[in-house]
Length: 396
Image 1 (cartoon, one colour):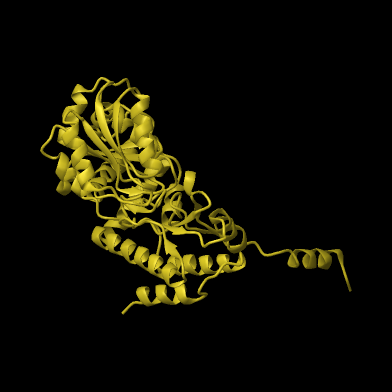
Image 2: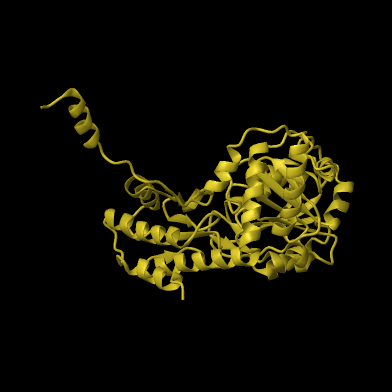
């Protein structure tokens, strides 16, 4: 006998099944379940002994991640806030600064510097290429009064990496800082702050840290702190000297993002358990399998310079808009990747392999790209990319 309840059951049963979602964008990234559970615990007060004890451990473990003996500042901010602070806390209006502009975020360094009245010397790099160290040296030689070089370790918009170790070697014996945006590099690839002589290194929580957006981190060398004492830029919230003083007392200068710091403790425990060099090796293995798999599928990897370990930018096949690939991945296959930015919009799409990523995230990414391009009528070597990625990722 047909009943209203049976009718409701069949109506619900016939509804289309929702796509399972896969977040493979270069930030935000998936958050591990144990981290989510930790952040769901009851709130604690940020001036209580419980928070102080938590904060003590976190600030020490950040040194492990940064590979530095100096304190790492913790800000309630996005990465761009830390980038701004990396200008205002070390330079004075009218100072000269060199910046590498090889993508959307290199361009951002120039915009921040200009906003605070700095003289800028731009090293223009074709998007997708890595900066030539000879060009950096030439800029430094031509501008001996330059106070800093600003650069990305990983240019998220193009999938290219810059040789920040080489740049630091050029600035080490000059009265010039090496300031690095490591927002998609920290916790993904080796950026040993002290060993390479990096002076200011910024990062953000929604990338290799496997956290939601909302935290930014800044490592500062002794050399950079001396610059801070001379800096006259106006600042209030992003006052690094004030944050350093608060850090010494196991606190932040202003109200911290408490739940995110609770999650950060879990993330840093995971990093220590895996071992930092193993973390780097895992990301490199996934990045290599992604690139080689997509090439086997008949696609072209965009960067012509050193590829980033964090994100792979892929050239859209002839006759297909890269934005359509990005949208088809999301709407037909449940995979959220990223499109191209600025003049690369429609020409490339981007797949990330950072943070809480493993073998099967890579297999999903390559398979989904093959299927999305096929859906759009493009030419792709269906299955060849997945096969190649599997060959590179199989445990032997």
